[in-house]
Image (cartoon, rainbow, N blue to C red; front, side, top):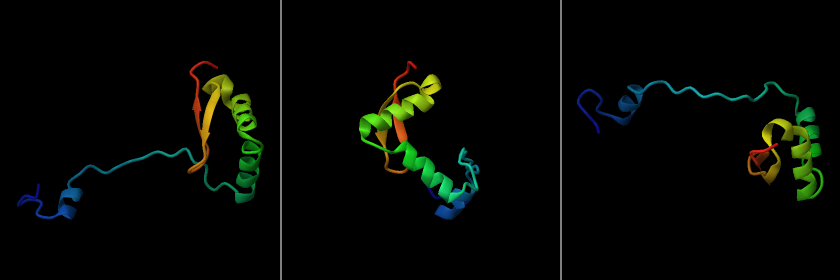
Length: 81
């Protein structure tokens, strides 16, 4: 709601707390290294991709069940390793 103290949307936004986010992205990360790593992780058919994910990360993240590649590699995993 607009008020006398904050008569515009920008004034309303200015009164909000600053937003902080965290990314565990490694910068700078060489493009050639990234492309090679992604190529290895995405080689083969779905079963092979899931097996690679489980082999690399299964001991602490559980067995890979599905992969989504919309904006990177996103894996749904079982709770048990």
